[in-house]
Image (cartoon, rainbow, N blue to C red; front, side, top):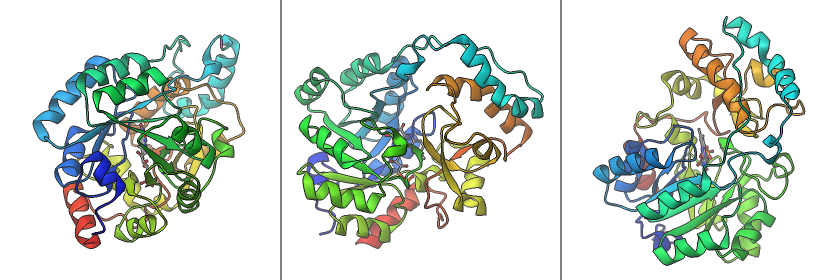
Length: 352
Ligand SMILES: Cc1cc2nc3c(=O)[nH]c(=O)nc-3n(C[C@H](O)[C@H](O)[C@H](O)COP(=O)(O)O)c2cc1C
């Protein structure tokens, strides 16, 4: 019974396969429902959404599934260094990107550094909606927030990029820990040490966390097929979380250009770069990640995202696929499925 684990018991799901939440507009209710309806755990990455948008999305989700699902938020959604960030510095950093804006014949945008955190308002909304699971990255919510989740019967899932972060999450008594290795697509959600000092691979991290904690473990990063799931479970994980393999499916909201990139030869070359949002994340390497190397200062998160917004829109419109970064995990070379429903069914069949 490969599919009876601490996680399936805890989350009341049939199979220990979780859809990685993909914030920034990549998650959809269709993608969530494909995974939850098949007996896994679907999710919505909601960190960019307003409370009203979360309510709206949740309404649609409930028309598509009556199974458990997860809403994911970012505990820390604005860099501390953004407060009082000097205007001259913003203008200086903008100039680094000017050649790319010029290439697309668009002006550099005016930027307002006054960006408040959304997290606490989003949490209030989440507590009204009461999804089965509340997962979060970039930190640990306050004791009050975790206690309220406990009272409401919502399971809490935190993400660790190092053993120390896993120990901190266990100390806070979260219900489960995502052990997320550096192979994973999207942001590197480190919160104790800088992301570039928290680069443990998934299969080592699972073993470290298994050796030193008792909390159920969800392995994330580089898992895209049944062999990967078997390996993660063999090393001590109680479930897996898959992002990139679902990002290419029809049910995801990635652009056709993004999906084509993931299916192309280029996806063998991913890099960790801050150039897209201001925080380190894994994406397919391109001219911008090569030019703006990791040690070059970019704007704090999420101001850098606002700088790149118009560039992204123009690059998509003009079909300039080498100028904009596309999120991807390291293990994209074997991606096959364009239907999330089919992918999850194949994973379950090959595991059984
Ligand atoms: C485009 C994209 C966006 C992501 N956004 C989030 C997010 O908002 N919250 C989160 O917890 N994880 C996020 N992740 C990480 C995934 O949930 C998952 O843990 C990761 O993709 C697993 O590694 P894999 O891509 O190698 O399968 C994102 C991943 C991608 C590819």
